[in-house]
Image (cartoon, rainbow, N blue to C red; front, side, top):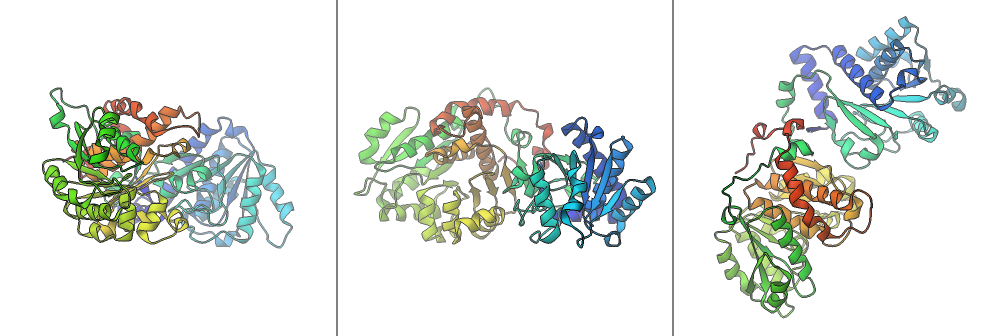
Length: 534
């Protein structure tokens, strides 16, 4: 499913109206009728409830006026409370406002000189509130009367149905701009907005439905939007059952640089994550003295003992052995638990620059590169980095709050500047590619907040790369499956107690479901995306 910003959606509207010739009033009517149908699905007896439409002065208000008319026609007692005078209305909003008067639908205009409580009583009488105050164009913090009204509405605890985006929520980031409506449901128009799925968007938007308002598919297709919501339909379009004659030699060979004294568990989790997504072969580069431990700990993965430092981490002296072994393999996963020993740091930097195969980098590898990111610029093969917010902050030279406040832009900018695919982990994990593609994940649970989860993800992404998936798709599919496996393993019944190994036995079953899923629910099918499986 495509994700749009407010400016992108405005441009789609403009093209539809000015270039295609579909009048704006038609789009507004389509929006209102689609929203009404959705709202009645959310509250089946809505047409028998006392409805108050809270309106501002822009097109969002026009949508609210049209909804007032529609529910009035269904027999609902409807009142409109408009926070701005009639002379502030124009265009399609004004047309729908004038219709209200001709139909005798009560419209009350707020007067800031009068008592707040007396005027808000019009809203308090409602059974359901339709929020049409502020639309997707909001950029600045909500202040004054709008802030007072929004806070008072939230305090009522009554069902609130928002038009396009909950008032006060930034449509491009999901940030609350001072204050924002906490909606029961939101009907959004044309395309899902980034703000619905990022930041506080999910908590503020409630149940969300995308309403088709009549923008021609050709207009959307020509928009150049390369931002998607990772859902089952999209991910299933990227994976299919293997041919019957598939063998391990055709399923990809992954190499892993992970583990050191005290951190052998990280290496095991990376290897097992890769095997569970279907990598045919996995070889772990292991410090010689730790090989006996890993020989016992790993059953299906192979080990290759290499030179080590005095701290029992892989040494720079292992460089030639590793590069020679990589020559005919498909990918290298590196970083989890490798340590920050000076010799290991030097090795990691050389591998980033000279690896003949794609790399997936996590944990200690990211700490090393945060100190010196130059190897990323000199990498000879595609690179995927998988930072959590703290690692992203160090890589980008920002604070964690700065990263979390603007996750999408931070990930996209770092990806473009360093020519790497970024997997910015966290609630709503982001995947950003240097060519501008970006995806937002929909799966996961707070129960994933435990050690080792990221190691499994590193292995999963790398295991998909070795099977031939284009790196951006491999990262997206790995992230989606990782979160889905956590949901399945926890049964969505707990926010605590899940451990990384709980995910492993669940993964193959989930891949099987995706392989047989009809991808028809996705707005982007495999044949529609120029970045095909290689």
